[in-house]
Amino acid sequence: METPRTSPTFFILLLSLSSLSVFSVSFSPIDNYLVDCGSNVDAAVDNRLFISDSSRANSHVLTSPSRSKSIQVRNQNPRLPQIYHSARVFDRPSKYVFKIRDRGTHMVRLHFYQLNSSKFVSDDAQFHVLVNEYVVLSNFSGCSNPSVKEFLIWVDTEKLVTTFVPAKKSKFAFVNAIEVISAPKDLILDTAQFINGDKIENFDGLTKQALAVMYRVNVGGLKVTPFNDTLWRTWLPDDEFLKSSDGLERVYFSGRIRYQSGGASREVGPDNVYNTARVVASKNASILNLNMTWEFPVMEGYKYLVRLHFCDIASISLGLLFFNVYVNGNLVYKDLDLSVLAGYSLASPFYADFVAEGDHSGVLSVSVGPSNRSLGYAVDGILNAVEIMRMNKSRGILDGELCSGLILKSWPRGNIGVLVPFIAAVCLLLSLSVFMHRRVRNSVAWSKLPMDVPEFSSKLGKQQISVKL
Image (cartoon, rainbow, N blue to C red):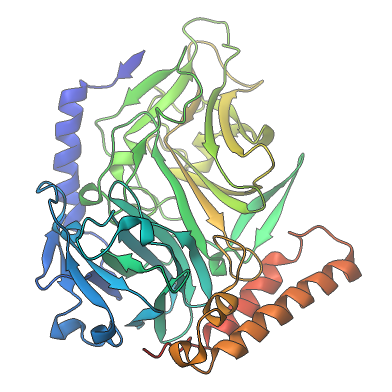
């Protein structure tokens, strides 16, 4: 069932018009690298210009380009963005180096599409990707469809280094395009709420965690493309993850989203996300015994940042909306009152960050539904968007089981530089330190992670990996 505040067709037109007004005051990053890898010409995508990595303007980015290969992909779909028509291929560890002027969180996006070239067979693509000391992809082989792998990396040095390492000497690595963009300072705050069974505790040090974006979902709405997002992100519809739509309603809103100081900014979530939602609504005096539930596949052994976006675009008045929020079946918000959290204003966005463990079930769930304070003839639950990001393990691992030093150590010293034995030793010492710390304290793994790991990562960030080709 749909409850549009205006017709869907007219709503889409309004979204397009609102996007034009948003871009007139859009975020302007200090660091903004857009690299078209393997191409001889620049490419325009979503009103942004990706500069060829063969261009003189980018000559300082790719180290030793003569030791890599530039290929043009055959029989490419002409409707695909131009950045997927070429690729840079590496048969040994190679790196791009980006000069950083704005220290802090950076968005790193890596674009991949399967290779279709007479010189390379897609089956031979298998590689690792490192961003500074973090392993962001392990034993990766590319994608059958155009794909963007996005990471949020804290950078407190003057360089961000992206290294591509073939998994074996018989394999190769490749990339179609790279984005390195400094993030707004309010995108990732330092404290979230850690879900420890039925307890909710502070999780500090979130800012300096490395994050891999797993899901970014526009609840109840359409796909939001980079052209319509303030930070050039993609938000997918939620239908694939919604457990059941029975009894739920979609809501469309054509009014103005009221961003307020201290709440969610337009960079945290664009208008196109907060203008739509799914709701549980009572049509009479009886309160529905119904929760909206979304399920997301995740990997066991990692922690996940779960960001939930709320904006009351459905109530007719303040003080009518109360509901409960659950993550992995645990009650994380009881009797949530958006009127209070949003500064007593309708259509004012608010978001909440939680840290949850990925367990053996392989599923992370989010639920919203009525509470004991819910009212009849009113909205009894609402959700506008969900973001789920995987957090790095203690050795800087976002994927796989090996730290960056051990990955680089698998190549001869002449190919990877003299710092690799040192980095491998650091990984080993860190592993021993974590093991001894756990034995001495006899505490759960998460308790000291926010305090210890970011400090160590910060120190590691000052040691740049040297890759000689």
